[in-house]
Image (cartoon, rainbow, N blue to C red):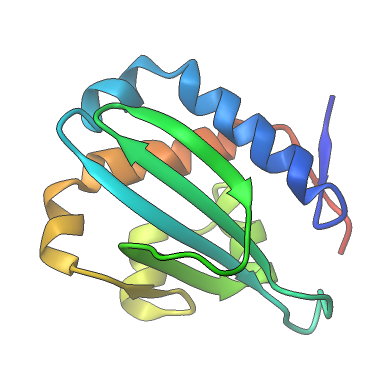
Length: 136
């Protein structure tokens, strides 16, 4: 069953969480890595609602927390407009290129993030595996 973004963002995050739990490649890539991520989908011309903010915790190969949240401490943030997230989740936009060339911005220790780039890539792959319909 497809989950619709942004209207069913809470369900979408739950699906993403489940995809990570069932992903041995994520567990292997994220071993010995602990961080809290803030993934933020910001409004743009296609989506004029409130930002969608996901708190996702990685802890030694597991993802114990994935939830919608607004105020929390985090180690890394990835922010970008709705249309860019849509393109990335459809596989039309490479996440690394979108960070280097825009429209995504990253906050946090980039050296540490690069050391764990395969874990981050698995986060993106798992998000792409969620059956998603886009409302806008």
